[in-house]
Structures are given as C-alpha cells and as structure tokens.
Length: 171
Image 1: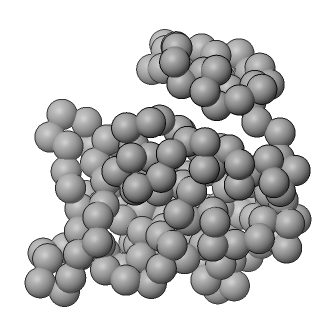
Image 2 (image 1 turned 180 degrees about the vertical axis):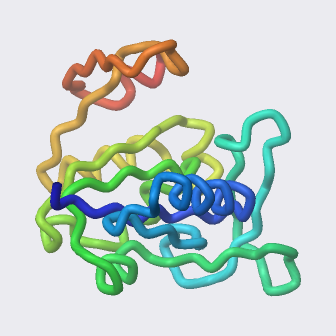
C-alpha cells in the first residue's frame, strides 16, 4: 500500500484518542495526526462542544484567551506542508464551502471529496449547500449521495448520483 493519511483533528479529546489509537495499532508510518482545524484562514478557533455527540461539536472563531483554542490551517497550507491528496474527507460541520473555496481543486488534481452537507450546518458558516454545489459543479465535479440511513449498523453504502443538492436535503 502506498496511500498516506493526514488526520487533522481540532478537538483535543478526540485528538488524544486518535493518537492513542495510532500508537496501539503500531503507529503506521503512512498516517500522521495533526492537532488543528481545517479552516479557510490561519487563525484561532474555539471548540463548541456537543455534550451528547462529540462528532457534532464544531469550531467558531476564537482567540488566544480561549482555553484549548486550536489553530486553523487552510487546506492549501496543509497540502504544501504534507502532500497532495487523492481523497479529501471533510467533516467540518458546515464550513466545507469556506474551506474548499480557498483552493482551485483542479490545481491539485481534483481529488475525490467526501463531505457531509446540511442546511443547518452551512448556515452556521454563513453559506448554503447550493454554494458548495455551485463551487464543485463549476470545477466539473459530479456529486453523489449515500442513500443509506445515517448511523446504520453496517458500512454498506448505497451511492447514487444526484442532480442537485436540494433534491436530497429535503429527505
């Protein structure tokens, strides 16, 4: 296998767990963990924790006065510092458009993108799912949806191509 992974995690608790899991698995040389936030600009962010679901926690602009503030790292900076990805998986709770709009994806080979998109999360970042869709379509991306119910008991995907984000966001 020749793939490499850069796991970027801003939540300090999740980052510690990630590091522990990497150590337990022998710390694969192809996987590196970075305690930061993938962001549209290099600035500090504070964590807004979701007490019931750590995966629903998110970041908003912060300052050095915020306990546990995490540094935002633009996608282009990460690519320059590490490697050009073939696949990018973003789960940044609505900030996907802000991050992806900072980088002409064709310049890095139009990597496969995985992202979770919702109206509520996008609104948190003053954008709309349609903004992300327009950005991707303008760069000649095709868009697909995992039709399977979220949090299913298995990892079998039912993937279909979609005409428009609006078609699936209503479901």
